[in-house]
Image (cartoon, rainbow, N blue to C red; front, top):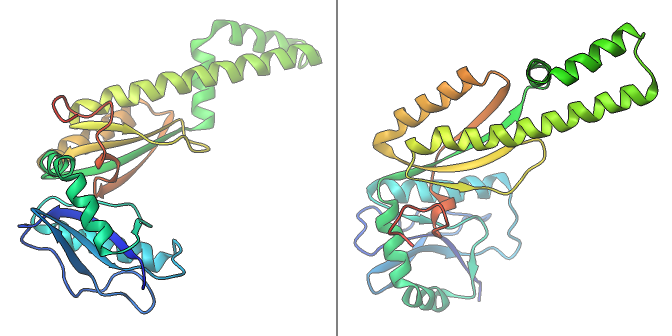
Length: 249
């Protein structure tokens, strides 16, 4: 007997939950519903050789997109598997209060992920402009034909420290400037090359306002390169975190 793959969780009275549509797998598994009380899990059989292949990632996303048309759905991340349908129903029963609270909190909300990195040339220019000591040492080295090995090493260490300091400042500034346009923010795992990885929970009625705030940051912080991904199902907010709105813990 195959395991049960879980796409998302919704209220049992959700008007547009899919049944019979195709989900993950090759051949694609049929999507079905597991109901428990006032909750429903959107599931299918799980392939034995499940891997994060493009086709399956898109199928997972498509099921959630179709499901979310008529109301809130708590999206499960790709690869969420239970032993069987009975185990899914048991979890729905055990965590019913939590799931109902999250469904209320996420109604009419989407997620936008914003990653930021420095434009290398632009941030070096900014660091030079802000740090008189670095400017002085740079000029001294230039006049000395490049300076000694020790002087060049010292300058390099000063520049690296200044850039790292600017990264920390810019990460804080990015969250501070975008947070007022969102209902909640979740800090994602650190990833190579990005100084900030933030997910914002945004009301669908406030999306234009949020994206306008992103463009303001782009304009005011020309040394930052921003990558914005969304709208997405609110994956980062299925579990309330420290930054969740007051009253949703």
